[in-house]
Image (cartoon, rainbow over all chains, first blue to last red; front, side, top):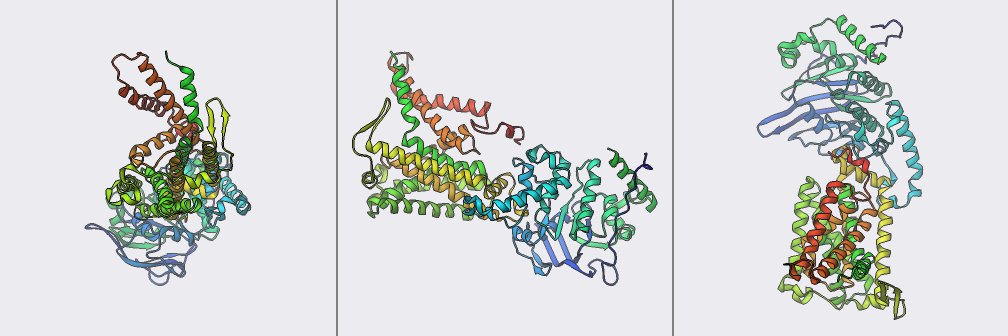
Length: 307
Length: 327
């Protein structure tokens, strides 16, 4: 590792003091963007989600972690209107969202990505991006026939799309079919596309899954970027190093319930989390000391910079 | 001896025949449904039947003028699309396929039933509704044209009107598909959940697409009956599958595809049937009866189309690049 030549990236600035009072599952937040109560969802006899109370802090990066089958994606689907809960209510930015269809949720500024990437394959990368923009006049069927009523807006959208694409290093691919992108590039495209709508809350379902290490760094940077731009990020992830690296707050789910939350270091030291989530293999990843983790992370990041 | 010149002339007639135009319009509607939006509509024959009966019944039973009869047909088609779409467009694509194929058959059987004979003419169908349309003809009586394209004033008027409607419909579809509206529609074809996640009302867009493509089919159905009578047997599921054949021949997500596809389909069908019939009469196919010869055209056309779909699945106007990514 020849890391001395290049400036080492500063550790991301963590937001702190997000909660009020003693840290416990369901703790109140200083400025929550989502507040959910008694959200349950059962599939037959299986209770996939049973959340008594949870708050997601605004303008922070919150990680939702938990073992497979903990109900993380189901909770995502419920919060974004892609699934209907059996009971429960939740408020996004002051608006009650229970029962609101997914497209309206998205229009309110809560945009999600999917665990299995949904690039629109036979549309060009640029068209994928343009589709993400909100309030397009030309999306009305009758106005679509009168191009002069939407052409100016279309040009603005295109300029914005190209700017975002170049930030995500996809601008050279703009005219290609999205189908021609690699798995990692599709993740980037999906995230960039979500940003076209200027969301307040970006919900990323496993943004790192299947992404090659060379892209991991730029994805991490993009996620950190969202926070500096004033957005809130809620993401599901299995990669503990990434969670530790970028998350300001961690919420742990197991068997549909929220079993712990708190700042990443505290949560990962929590015996309840280690039991519920990491089981007997916890020392393989989290047993390392803080210093070791930081060193490992830096090495990983530097290696990416060189490639 | 087989008269090849006659075969070619007869085939050339099909190039601009009103039937070709009617099928082109119906196929264009299907391109909007299937090619652009990904809606599997197996009931395009039903939309055409609504155009045919809507026009004929309005004219004969209700005594409406041409424009009102056309509006009745279009209105009925919109209602039909709503009835099909409201329950099914929220479900997976397969359900629309099942519902549309059944609904088109239900319509055909309703038009065939004896109970409604006074209005629908039952299995004999309807005729005598062309007067209003013929009265609009500005072309002075007489024969015009050259070679195989020599027609009387009514036939020319019919062809001009039919192809004008095809051109207008094609321009409309072309403009829509290159607009942001078309982008949403194509996005829905690729993955409707992704489009939903971007804040688009997918259900509403699918409904618009179903109505628009259905109205194109209905206009096709009206043109289809102007050179002939309305007969319920014409609106069986085979009609839908001929239109699918035309669509796949030309290219599913194209504007020119359905139009040129319809021309090729009808020219090919006419050429093959003309050739087989004459060759059989000339004794080229020993052991084949004339009835068998009449059916052979569908076998040959079927084989040609199978080869086409196998070796050029994107159709004539489809984009070859797309094929690299077909799942």
